[in-house]
Amino acid sequence: MGYKEILQNYADSPSNLLEAFHAIQDEYSYLPEEAIIAAADCFGVPAAEAFGVATFYSMFSIRKRGKNVIRICESAPCHIDGAADVVAALEKELGIKMGESTPDGNFALEFAQCVGQCQATPVLTINRKPYLNVTPASVPTILAEYR
Image (cartoon, rainbow, N blue to C red; front, top):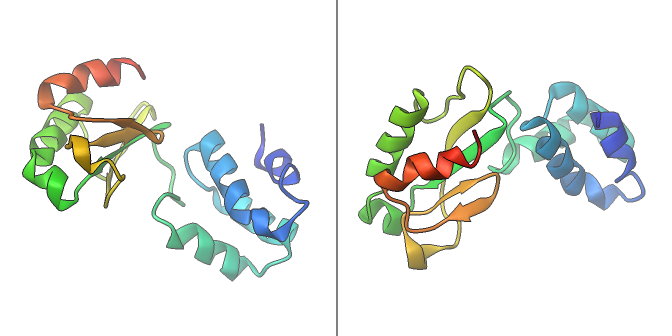
């Protein structure tokens, strides 16, 4: 589905801008510039305001990235329980560094501040699905679900 069709599904209320951005990002894995401009027109807000919303929230990306967004928590509990080792395993398994996407466009690696699962650290999410008590050894199995 194209971003114009997605926007039409949310156009009935100006308060739906965030929901529209979530839906567009779910489709494209990021918010294309032309989609942000179209959203501004659709919701009757200045383009600068729409870009402000798109860049303010850490869950949105305005640059192209891999389809499956892997975010690893870098808060203190995850850090203490070995998040750095999980990051190293992810980078090795995918052949990319944090902040990058795989050449095939399938995965992107990002840090998150906290995903609210401190009882089972370290935690990572893939497309908002949480994985708890992650170890370097569990990384290949987790990634296999998305390959």
